Image 1 (cartoon, one colour):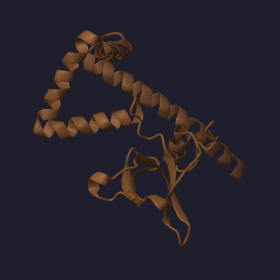
Image 2 (tube, rainbow, N blue to C red):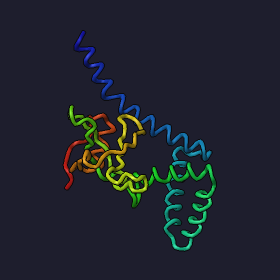
Image 3 (cartoon, rainbow, N blue to C red):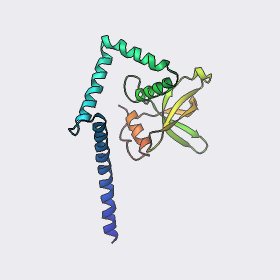
Image 4 (cartoon, one colour):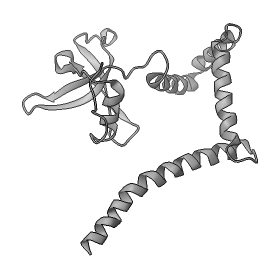
Length: 185
């Protein structure tokens, strides 16, 4: 009976990530297709990818770059929209684009006496504007969550970690289960 139960749990371990991944992909396609109302399954997703790519092209084009600049100016000058727009833009920019913010993994000593450390990413090395030049801003992502905490840490408690930032993020977000396969090259 124990052997049968072990096979059952092994089956769960294999099937749940596969089924959950397929479901998320299916739900994404279905949601996007439903929003656009196209009769062909998957067509809405392809149209959405094409639309995003065209906007990216237009945003890089000399003639239309100015139009997007004016749209951004409008969004950054509206009181409530500014907070939402700039927060989302900075968050997306932290993961993709030229201004990636999570590219400096560090080990932060929280409790030197008990040698308790956490992994995070330096997001700002200079905090002169807060009048605390001997501190740095470190983002601590949470495991199994799309959230985290920003902590202000004395620089002497921060130690750079010689690991690729993608590996470090994978390690943190998975709760220490994934990642950790190699140092920076």
